[in-house]
Length: 83
Image (cartoon, rainbow, N blue to C red; front, side, top):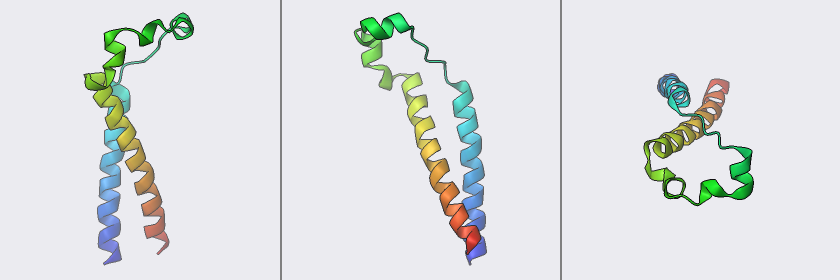
């Protein structure tokens, strides 16, 4: 029974790894200049305030979620392989 659970979690882990690699590579580089950071110019426009609703915002959330899932599954697999 533990072998079946181990194989299922391992399969999900591989899929999450592939998804994390793909999501990390298709994201755009978020590089705002130092002058914008100091003056706060980037935080005042409409796009920056609603960035979470755009495609880039969704990609960022999915990447964070898959990264957390990657960590949780890594810990779960280490526990399962010790048993």
